[in-house]
Structure formats: structure tokens, C-alpha cells
Image (tube, rainbow over all chains, first blue to last red; front, side, top):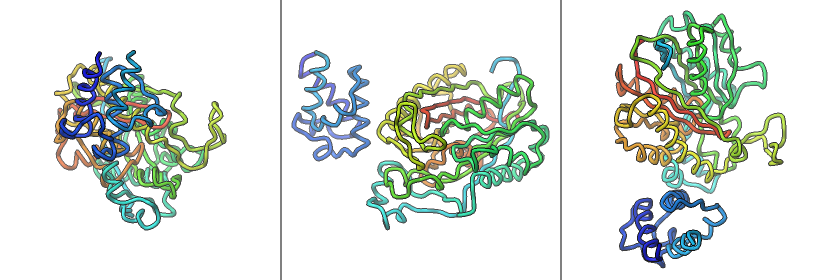
Length: 80
Length: 327
């Protein structure tokens, strides 16, 4: 999967879980500050990404995923 | 279920203490707010037992309510199971106190399996009647959780409330009653939700306090996943599809967990029973209390397929499908 493909899928998960307009979901966007996520939203988001990409994301790793870019990079590294 | 003998719920009752505690009361002494609590949990208020009111008292009141609604419902009851995580004592069992109070002839024991305890107890009652060990079984879920909370922990103190619920399980007409049960546990999650009793630690060395402790994040993830898998399994075992479910009564712990389960089942809100806003999480009392409210509101009609599901400390889960009525 290319970075762009991952980004598109990540975008769809974010739009669904955080109920935000896809246009707002840029690579630089921060989940909490820019996209209005609260602590439970971020848990649901991580779960959504786990389901979408068939991954398990540990709590420790999840803590470090703060922007859309972080999520895309993390998933890309995991998918190899 | 199998065996040609239809078994279901013959009578139902519930009780919640008079004292209402609103979110605003927490604002006075904790770093939290009504808005924060409502957004993350859907809870606006909960009921708190009086100083001298314990689980047995809530169980008595729930059974009294059941008797008021269904006079004579205890005739033919051969045993009592009380599902609770907050028994009055380690022993005697709270069920024995209920047995004595209502003069029931038969067995009495408590069942501890986290919040799904009442569903576990329904399954046991069902199995006992099916096996000829009892004609009817009184199944109570009662909790005085306010007695074991850490009132200074803003992450957990706001989540729970006190209540009791009771049902009589026995024979119903063919075509009604329980269609499936799903029970499960994953003890590798024991450390996520606990309250010490005799031992100060878990086998893995995790030290436990004498106050309720919960890793909210982990329990949230577990709950969302297991609500989905357990409900689908129960629906399939019942020979039904999600569209057949007329009324969904999920464990009332958190509105967002309920919403996630509802969404994954594809059910509209009109079919989902919610009272977490007014009672918080009352653990084993949660489902009978919500069930009674739904019956009283006319939301459950004879012949409706009803889906019940719960999750909790253990970690444990349970789900059941029953066709309402037939008493």
C-alpha cells in the first residue's frame, strides 16, 4: 500500500470516528487540538485503525500518535 | 432453547434508592464538570444508597417491587441466586438473606462475575430448571457500589450508582422465553478492573486496593469489541438476524459504548433502551432495571425478540436473546 492509499483510508476512518469534514483532515492535523477529539475519541480512532488495517496498536504506541501524519507513518512502518 | 421446554422470565421488579446525586455535586470537590461527564459517559445523575442501606436492602426492595407487580410470583420458587459484586458480607451469602426475608424454601447462593453477573445467573437458573433441579428460580442483581468507590478518583467515582433488580425464571408457553445464552471470560484482563477483598494482590503480583479501580481505556476497548461479538453470537445462536431484534437492552455503563454496539448491529435508537443518564452503571442491577423501565413504558410487547448484553470485571461478558412474554 502506498503512503497515499494509507492516507486515504486513514482519512475515512477519522471522518467516521470524529465526524469531521474530510477536507479538514490534512497530514498536519492534530487529533485533539485541530480535529476536536477527546480522550475516548482517540481510543475509538485507534480501534478503528486497528480494524481497518488488521493491526494491533499498543497503548504505548497509541500515545505517540498525535497527528494524521503520525498515524500514516506508524501504519506504513507496521505494514512494511 | 433445546429440550422442548420453553423457559423465560415470569416476573420482574427493580428498585433504585431515593437519593439522587447529580454531576454538579462532583464539581464542588473534584476537578471535573457536568459537561465533561456527560460528553464522555452520557451520565447526568445516579442514585446513592442511604448510609444504612446495603445490597441486601436493595435486593429486598427489588423483590418487593416484583411481588407488587406480580402477586404470588414466588410460589413454586425453589431457590435464589443473587448476582452481586458488593455483597453485605463475604459470608453468609446475600441470597440467604433474601431467602429468609421472603420465606423461600430451597437453595440460596451468590454469584460473582462482574457486571454480567445477572445474565450469568439467568443462564444458571435456566439450566437448573431445564435439568429439573428447580421449578422456578428467583434471580436478583443488586449493588451498593457507592460503598466501595474511591470518591476522590474522578475517573471512576462519577460512573457508578446503586440499584437492585429481580426476576423469576420458569416455564413459559411454547414459542416464548430464552432462545440463546452466550457467556465468556478473559481473566488475562483481571488487572483492568478490581477491588481487593481477602488477598492484597492478583496472582501476577498486581497490588489491589480496597477501593474500586478501573483502567478505563482498556475496559472501554474491551467493551466495544465484546458487545459486538457477543451480541452477534447470541443472535445467531437464537436463529435470528439483527433486524429481528425489537428491543436491545445493553449494560448501562457508558452511552458511547452503547452507541458503538448499536451502530455495529445496525439498530436504530428507537430499539435501544437507555437509562444510563439517570442511573449510571449499577453493575448487576443495570439490565433488570432497564428492562423493567422498558416494559413499563410499553416498549416491549409479548412476542418481541429482546437482546441483552453485558461486560465487566473479570473480564467477563454475557449476552442473551429471549422472546418476551408467554407467562
